Image 1 (cartoon, one colour):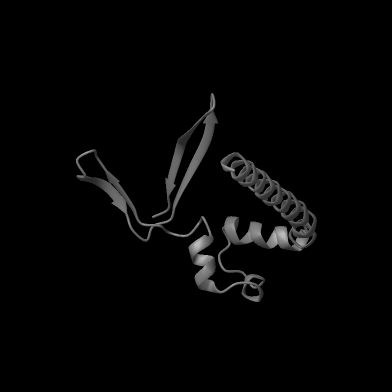
Image 2 (cartoon, rainbow, N blue to C red):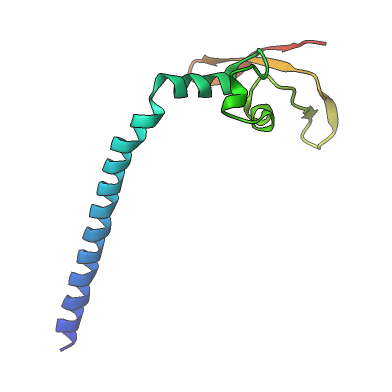
Length: 120
């Protein structure tokens, strides 16, 4: 009796895992078929690229697609306050409301800040 119950539970667990696996594969497949249709359009890509990477500020094209608040939080060329601290949390330096541009390079598989520019 106990063995029959054990086999029944084992079959149900295997069946449940199979159903979850099938649903996962089907949802992943449908996501890859639907998602690129709207995201890979050139205008969407260009808008996202401009929102993150433009150094021209909040241009006339951006208000059609995002608010200035969203732009200021996502654009990498906006001024960010920077604090430079040592291991004991002593403030060594920093800046506030000054745009800083870091040049980052991949040297032998490691990312390094190779140049920093502050326009004052």
